[in-house]
Image (cartoon, rainbow, N blue to C red; front, side):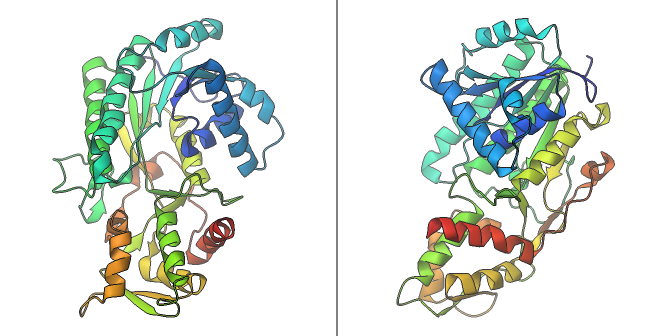
Amino acid sequence: MQRQQDGGSHDILLTGSNGFLGSQFVTPWLQRHPASRAACLVRAADDPAADARLKAALLRAGADRNATTGLDEAIGRARAICGDVGDPAAAWLDDVRRWREGGDGRPLRVLHCAANLSFRPGDRDAVRAVNIDGTRFMLDAASRLGATEFNYVSTAYVAGDREGEILEDVVGGQPPGFSNAYEESKWEAEALVRGHGARTGMPFRILRPSIIIGHSVTYRLSALSGFYKVVETMLALGRMPRTRGRVILLPMPSGSTLDLIPVDTVVAEMMALMDAGPSTLGHAFHLTSDTPLPLVGVLDALSPLAGLTIGQTEEGPVDKLAELVMQRLRHYAPYLGQIRRFDRRNVRAAGIAPQPLFDVEALRPYVTSFIGHAA
């Protein structure tokens, strides 16, 4: 099966293109490939609504990059396709086929970004329906459309509760445990992608971001989740009269790190990997930080902004206030107390440039921007 070479014209079918990561990917990709087009699957009531949702998302993403030159032209090569990855009949396939007729026989690549990101136990069925069944349906759709490759956006946290060095291509057995249904569903979906590739010969890549934060130009975020939910919780506690100025020690192991990565860094590495050549096919890649942040440093940085002192402890009883914090952060606490390192050997072998230094000082404007918008 032939793979489209770097710089050549092609069509690309994307899911999740009106989400934060997907929308940040579309127009830079089209500007990088000026003879190519994108079909963007968007869940909406009808075609006009899908088109409006997509354009709004792409314009917001363009504003994050301060991109004006060529933005309208790139958006003009992005076509909204009204559909849902959870539709087993994939009724939207006919719309994609009609769109493909205007492509002069270009090869088709697939980028599957859509996912249900909920960590709540009550959302388990919905998470599995989108992340597992939706991936199965998209793999089938890719085959039916004659796609030349399938690029799957997973998560670095398919590692579950494993610690230490986490390798990219060591699949092994299922981790001993997962923090939530989201991690588990992405692990199962990766197995579907590999199995489909083995059965059909369809080339694939597995792309595993860690905790995505805002854009490095505007620091904008798309949703109050992940790291920002932690910041919001700290801010709320700092505003309470009974907690203002208090010292809160969270029960976290020393040596814990937080793996944060700006959305535009993820996009840049995704694009580079997808254009790096056939050697990247059949592999997984950790789109994680070159410099994970020490948790104690992040907490020190948050403390003056939140109006209370936040630290970590491995000794002694946890007081009621710390218990309150941990309860409010119960869905996110597992990501604060991790002692692991995501290996990036595959990323380095693909020739991906080193990331700009991202330390605690570099994190500060993301937090202060969030606080400014939350005020």
